[in-house]
Length: 144
Image 1: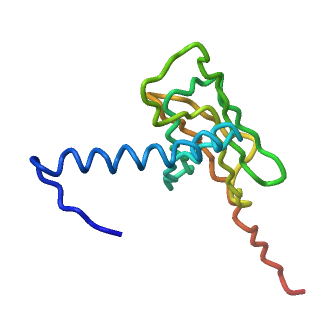
Image 2: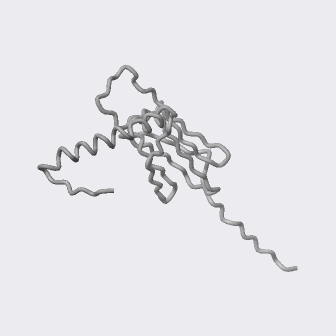
Image 3: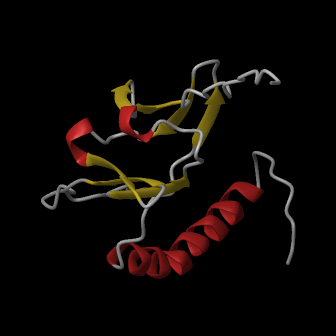
């Protein structure tokens, strides 16, 4: 592999040819993965707050009606699917996020009955309240 230093001038034409070749070669594999319905694995932050954990997930372009959140068998599963506009003619298409999927294992310290979620500015916020930890009752036994 040859590494070229980029500079404006004589290398512009050559660099553009290499980039065009790269896009031509990868175009077929990208289209095949798109046709198979490869899911987006969205970027996620998990924040530990005092009373809860908060999952912050980037879901740009997805409306709240496109996203489904389920708790099943101790797992939190977030999936989404949206329809792609078919009647468009692209001159260049570098992304296509029509599906997303992410699964999290829930610990026993999560109150699974009170999980809530909201979407703001392309970010999904899932609130996972911490379960109330009951203090063990201490009973003093008098000696007879």
